[in-house]
Image 1 (cartoon, one colour):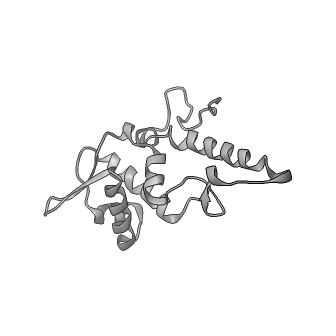
Image 2: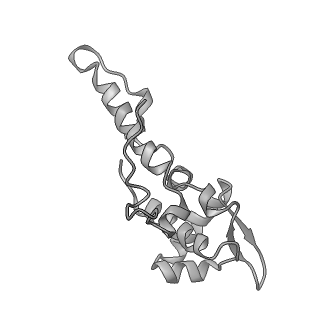
Image 3: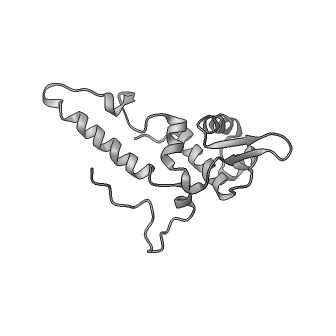
Length: 148
């Protein structure tokens, strides 16, 4: 998995919006608070809005707000909205990679990597990241992987 600047900025922007939930946050405030270039952030916010994770309000009191509570939006939701597939092999989703001969087992390795990444990013919500300890001194995103 490669985390691009765009994906990193998107998660950081969503965390900044989540911190103010349910209030509306201006794009300029998001850019300044997370040190994200404003022009780059505009495109990211558009992707997040199109994915149904944010809604925007126009006008002097306008800005961006989450479409649902922070515990209902995962890091995986944000990454998919801005970057597409979580894991790629030669630029294609891991589930379409095919191999022959001695490398036939490699496809299952890439799928296992993909499932492990999904397990982490699809269980880590914005709320988890805003309150990282689960009461037992352990970070919520440090869960053991699920058994399939």
